[in-house]
Image 1 (cartoon, rainbow, N blue to C red):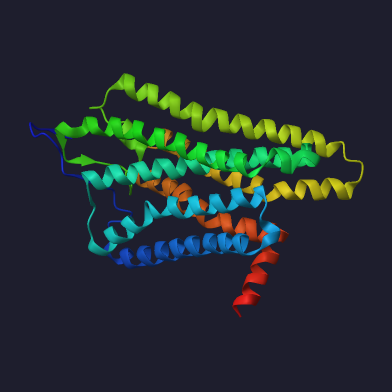
Image 2: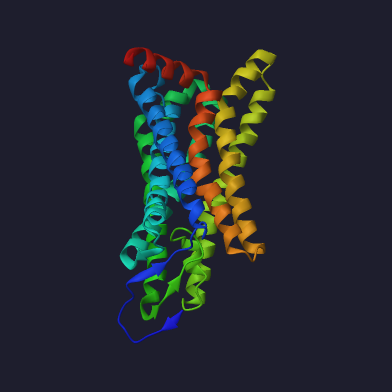
Length: 309
């Protein structure tokens, strides 16, 4: 980055997925298809839940919010990437970068916290089945969706405050295909102490506490399931958690692998591949996991299809 005396910078430079012109149409078609599959798949989940009275329960209320968050999450990065491929441009405006980074932080962190909320929901359903509807009342469910949004909004504003320190630099290059908050934290021109505080805060709020909550919830769930005398009862109880566990492993697995890969890899191109995994692939696979592993969702989708036909 080159220092200058201007009061502000106007644009950032993103990384291209490939510099080969022959690959550009292929990449455009691939990511457009993945984006459409993600949006349509999650919309179908939302429509199936909203149109079926049998699915108007806390579990599916959280699932519909997760699907909506996934649509918003992938929409913060992929449309801009598709436009850049079409226009052969790697430039994003200063305001556009801050906006993309804010939305990415909000919806990425909401994904993280909603998975923790869904683990708590499964814990109450299995460990306290008789009090489930009393505990998970509509007011609490609404609060458990609003709180992750509020915390995620706070995190995005912290990242914005750090990015605003880049006002006196030009030719700012970002080593990713979108304005990744972690990339902005690593710029040498930002305050090291502030970066460290934000990193620890983010790691605790969106890493340590959610993972601890999920592990504790499933420790209690497994303990309760093991006390069920019949094997059929154990299978039925655990089957309600299968889809959620699959999404948890996919979300944290791709995120952790991407983080570790970027920490040890010296190749920016390989870092971009890791980013694609958790920003594009994970939201795309979530609808398939829930529709294939959950009988209620499959039945609701079939009834929705029958009504449409």
